[in-house]
Length: 196
Ligand SMILES: [Zn+2]
Image 1 (cartoon, rainbow, N blue to C red):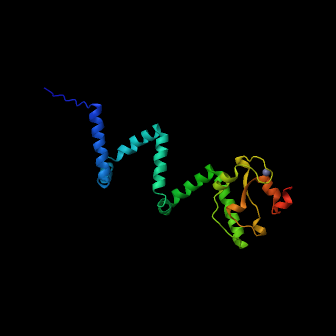
Image 2: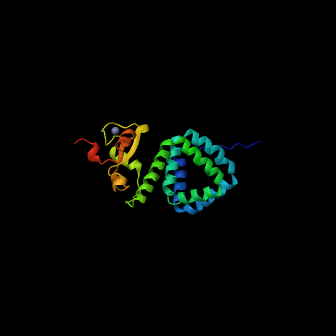
Image 3: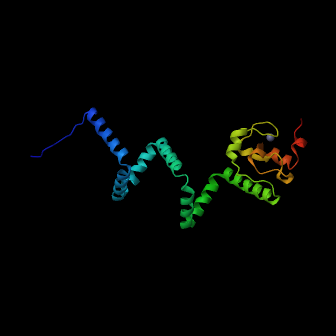
């Protein structure tokens, strides 16, 4: 006769079991990590299959975990990326191509940024690392030349003192402007384009 044994755990027992597990984990982080690593190596399909399902069903949690991971490894990621790109040049090229296609705005900003850097360097003006995201956060999407709202596809960045007139390529010398207003202004000084 088959013996059937069904273990039923009360809520209380479950809580105690989980609590002791948590304590063990906190006390032996290295041992737990080694164990997990070994378990993963022995069950390579588990996370590939179930991880995928879980991620699809929990996109917000997945994004949070990803963000935490990026935060924890932010000093290593650029180096890892570089190593990966050197080992997989073809894949990296295809990835960059895909990224440029999907993010035309970022690509345009990069091109503009490098052009500004080159010009600033050529005339020997100061150069600073510029965050365009920070400039938008500071100014809002408002054109500093005409004072009207700027839509994403009209967005450009204007040097308050033009580089050709000795202006620095630095955040405090860059403001949000319509692309059209920016082009119209050219390298004229602000006093010449803004009515007092
Ligand atoms: Zn404008």
